Image: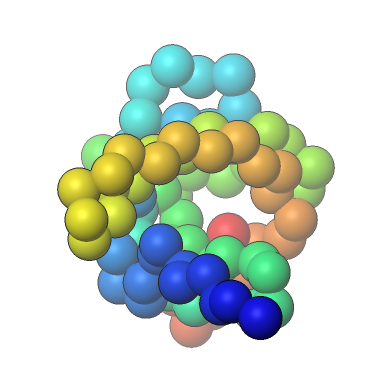
Length: 86
């Protein structure tokens, strides 16, 4: 059985486009919970961008080997403490 290396790491930078927006905002990976990725809530002018659960998000990241990954996902949940995360 071969194992596939996870292309993403905690503290890795991401660019996130909330909802149907074409504008991307900086974020970073905070944690992994099973197959779910927990990311820092993107900010617009130092104000957290709030979305409703179930909202669509798009993202992109550059992996260690220089490969650009892009993805689409759905916001499952968010929390404001201890830090704002999606």
